[in-house]
Amino acid sequence: MKIGRLNLALAGLAFSVAFGAALWPHARNAGAILVAQDDPAALSHIQLSSLLRNNGSLVAQNIDAALAADDADLANSFVALAQDQHVAVSDEQAKRVADAVAEENSTAHFAKRFASGLVMGQADDVASLSGTVAGDLFVFGDVRDAVREGKHLVMGEATDRLVLGLATAGLAVTAATYVSAGTTTPVRAGLTLVKDARKVGRLGEGLAEWAGRSAREVVDAPALEQAVASGSVLRPGETATAIKAAFRAEKAGGLVRLAKDVGRVTEKAGTRGALDSLKLAEGPKDVARAARLAEAKGGQTRAILKLLGRGALLLMAGTFNLTLWLLGAVMTLFGCLASIKATTERATQAWLDRRKRRRLRQVQAGPAVPVLSPAASCS
Image 1 (tube, rainbow, N blue to C red):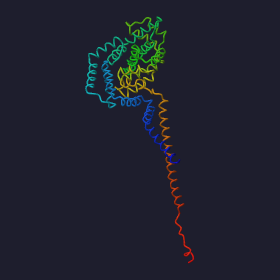
Image 2 (image 1 turned 90 degrees about the vertical axis):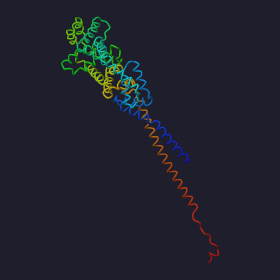
Image 3 (image 1 turned 180 degrees about the horizontal axis):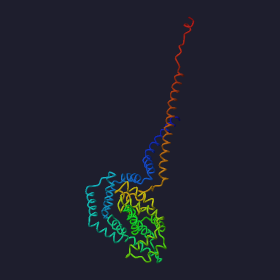
Image 4 (image 1 turned 180 degrees about the vertical axis):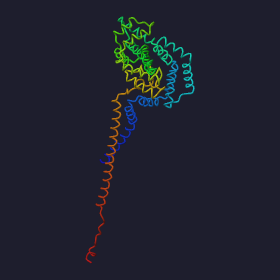
């Protein structure tokens, strides 16, 4: 019976050790994710390590896909990520990426995209953003957007109030940019990029709703209606002054902070990195997290966002599920310790019982007693 109890304790110990060994990697990863949930750079690093460890060809596949889509910037981002994660990239593939980047940065391509951004007011790379920002700095772009959407508002037609609010805020920020000798240029660029993302449908739904509510607050509708009634893109200076009068600076704090964060992403991860962030973001906090990620990861940001999506910005796995892994590890450890305790106690008891039985047999055997004959006893 006692030997059976000892064997049962040993079996429990073996099971606890085996189960704990299988559970430990998951629990360790869950613990690391929970600790890093407020640090986008650390959170993405943990997830990327696991993802690339399980699929070593993922980087090469995405580089080929980016090149096929004529997105040299994204392909180059994956090359940077491969270097950071110590993933091998073939010389042939690296050369193709370098050639594509050189072509994209050529003078002819830059001039073409700059002109497109200046005239069309839409940005999807550095060159077109430069053209769009130039147009907005000369107030042409913002006046055009404010007059167009403002007239829709006056006529009772469908109005994109977000574009209207961003254009109105942009005119005020442009004036501040000139006064401050360019120190607010990142905010100016951020507002332009958010506006462009809205135009081309690359603004996350949640972020668009939040920005739309904020844009309504920064515009004095009656004053704006009066400004656009007589405004015209042919008189940009006069029209801009009238529209700026409809801007409520005290209500623009949220939009300005958003623009600053977008500017930070653009500075570290490029225009397309900022657009990718705006597409994934569900609110201004997501954009702030994207800015922290871009400041830590730089050119790798687009590749990280491509692989992890919104999970690069915040903890997407259920906290409850991760906590269960940790709880399972704690319970397994407790079971292992309990099994060690039971095994030690039963092994010790078995050893003591064996000693008692051996001593009892010795006592029962006792020393041999000599038997005397009658003659010897009489003498």
